[in-house]
Image (cartoon, rainbow, N blue to C red; front, side):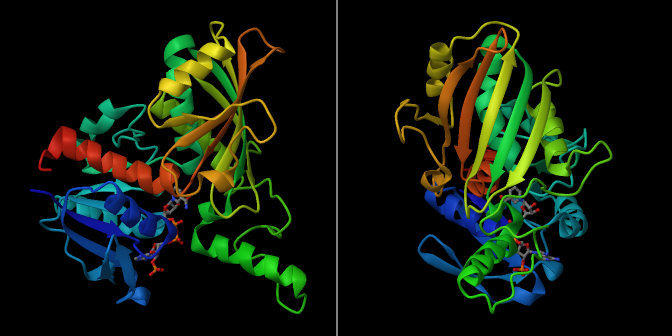
Length: 340
Ligand SMILES: NC(=O)c1ccc[n+]([C@@H]2O[C@H](COP(=O)([O-])OP(=O)(O)OC[C@H]3O[C@@H](n4cnc5c(N)ncnc54)[C@H](OP(=O)(O)O)[C@@H]3O)[C@@H](O)[C@H]2O)c1
C-alpha cells in the first residue's frame, strides 16, 4: 500500500522537479493529484512515463489525501496550506511562510530527522531556503566533530531560485544583448542579470542585510544549532540552475583539512570532488539534475586558529527545494505514517 499524494504548484520549477524526483526515487504513490492556479487548469505535466492534467487548487478537497507537497509562493500557501492541514493531509511546504514558527519543524533529513515528530503540532512541516539547505548538509557532520562557532558565507545563486520568471528574464536579456531592438528592462530582478551579478536577493532588512541573508542565519540556527553565528552575503548570478557557496568556518577545536575531507566523504547527501588541480572541483553546470551536494576546495584557513574554507555546490531546485521535500515525505512515511 502506498500514499495518496498531492503536488501543489505542479506547473512551476519546483513542482515539476518534485514530480521528477517522486518518480526517480520510486516514492510509493497510490494516487497523485497535481494542482496549480486556475490559469493553468488542464495543463499537462509529466510523472515518469505518465502525463497528468493539473486541477485548480482553489476548488480541490484535501480530505483523504495523505500528504501535500506545496511549491507555491507564501501568499497562496497562507490560504491553502491550513485548509489541507485541517482536512488531515500533512503539508510539506517550500515557501518561507512557516519556517520560523517555533511550532513547525524545519527539516533537512541529513541534519535533524528527529524533528519530524513535531509535524503533529499543526500538520505542517517546513522545507528550508535553497541556500541554507545545501550549506547545512555540509556543516552538520563537521559541527558534530569540532563544534562550529562562526560561519562566513558568500553565495552565487542561480536565477531558477527566483522561479520560472527568473529563468525567462535571464534568457530574454541574454538574447537581447545580441538583438538590441528587444526590451531588456529588469522585471523580476533589481538590475540586469544577463552578464552581470546582483548583490541583492529578497528585500532589505533594517540592519542592511537582505531577507535571504537573514534566512540563512535563522534557518541554520533552527536546523543545526542555535549557538552557531552566521554572516552571509547573497548574490544572484547569471546561471540557470545550481547555487554555489564559498563557506568559511571557524571551529572551537582544530580540524585538519584531511580529516574534514574524510568526514565529508562519509556524510549523507555529500559528494566530495577536491583534486587541487585545474578543473578538479565542481561548478554549478555539473550539479544540475543531481541529488548530491558537492564539496570542493577544502582547505585550512591559516588566518584564524581553527578555520576551514570550502566550496559547496548543489542543484537548488533539487536539494534546495524538491529533493529535500521528497526526502521529508520519505521520512514522514518511514517514521510516522508507515504505509509504504
Ligand atoms: N526555486 C527554488 O530554488 C526554490 C527553493 C526553495 C523554495 N522555493 C519556493 O518554492 C515555491 C515555488 O517556487 P518556484 O520556483 O517553483 O516558482 P514558480 O516556478 O514561479 O512556480 C510557482 C507555482 O505556483 C503556482 N501558483 C502560484 N500562485 C498560485 C495560486 N494562487 N494558486 C495556485 N497555484 C499558484 C503556479 O501555478 P501557475 O503556473 O498556474 O501560475 C506554479 O505552479 C516558492 O514559495 C519558492 O519560494 C523555491
